Length: 514
Ligand code: MCA
Ligand code: AMP
Image (cartoon, rainbow, N blue to C red; front, side, top):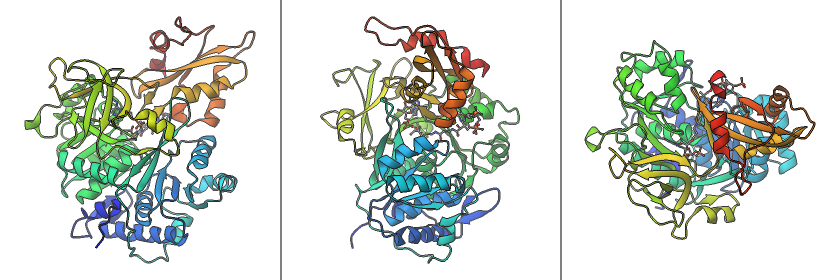
């Protein structure tokens, strides 16, 4: 018999023998592993009935719900390529993704149906369904009458499972193409490395339109046959209630900062926890230390990207080494990480250089961007992450990686990526603007906050409040600058390049007030 590399098949191989076991528990109801199998089958039938070619894309912009997860699993089962979209994206942003990916199916919140149907008609006539935060909508309506068994289609290891858009330095988003094998190999490695078992209870509060919440968290729990306590978003009151019954939590650093800010978050609340994992942005040593003092737990920091899923992790098992603040640990089994100079030559331990990686988890390229793909891989097949890092260093084992900066102009705010170029291009189109620079400055809650520095045209007046209001209609809210400062000219070096480091130093305290 031909073996099936379909990611759903892989995940389902970890489902518990007793399928009546609870897989997902929300404040309102619970879903067993049987429910997962049956509901994803029903959605898969709806998708299959559309009779679109294997590998067609399905773009999904919906609120987090268990049904949204079933839809993702259904897309895998039906052989479609899943394209999750942040619910904060505005129409103009969504239009770009839909135009670029040409999905055959779009699923959106009912509130966006009219706009999405018009967009579908303009860009190629995708079939549009709705799914709301309660799991209701036209998709579920159609699914109800479908059979509850579905023969998952056969996929090859290299077949695409998902495309994740990650913004580009030119302001144009790139779709990272992830295969069934990229995702299943990483899930398998994390399962073993982080010691997952069917006894685990994962507190799942992350959004499911990014790698962290969708792939790292959900895959780990499903493949372990574990239970997920499923909250629609980070909610500290709900988290404090759920933590005593949980064993694992994942979050971006802001999640840990907010937990620590609440005096009710105590060692006792964490009494059944075995693991807190942080990623997507740097975890401050202060947060790591305060967390350990308060709870007795050393947060495990790991590092990854949309293009690669997870790359490195601090050790889970104490005997394998300490969890060190400021480092992202060792390359995961099967993953290779090297630190190189500008000529792609490896630098000595302790020296800073470009982080390059390879492994079965690394994507095959950017959707319809062969040139960009070639640029981002070295001749000998290593992927250029755009991060700067080093191995080892003072008091750090030689094989631990630390991320010390970025070669790409990128701001990470509350775990969301903001590419300054995209925001600058929009600001520069605003009335009265001559030029602008967008920078990230330290922020106590979001890690970094977006700040714009704007130079008006001669004689023109720029109103920062009006500009923010205008930007809010075109950009996802987390990309809108928290502060807009008007200045006479941007600092430039002798080559004429804007000195963002100078701007960052000048404006580093502006966001403390926001
Ligand atoms: C919300 N706001 C933000 C952010 N989120 N501003 C900056 N950065 C943010 N991340 C703004 C809104 O615009 C709004 O402002 C105000 O904050 C309140 O919005 P609200 O929705 O209530 O915020 P929240 O619910 O408190 O959300 C904050 C959050 C959320 C919980 C930190 O952003 C979040 O869940 N982040 C996780 C992101 C994530 O999953 N990243 C993983 C990427 P206004 O009122 O002015 O509109 S995967 C990845 O990076 C890689 C591969 C990896 O390694 O994992
Ligand atoms: P994304 O485009 O969402 O895939 O973001 C990937 C980027 O997030 C990486 O290239 C890093 O710059 C950053 N990142 C992820 N995890 C960490 C971490 N633990 N520490 C520092 N940066 C991180």
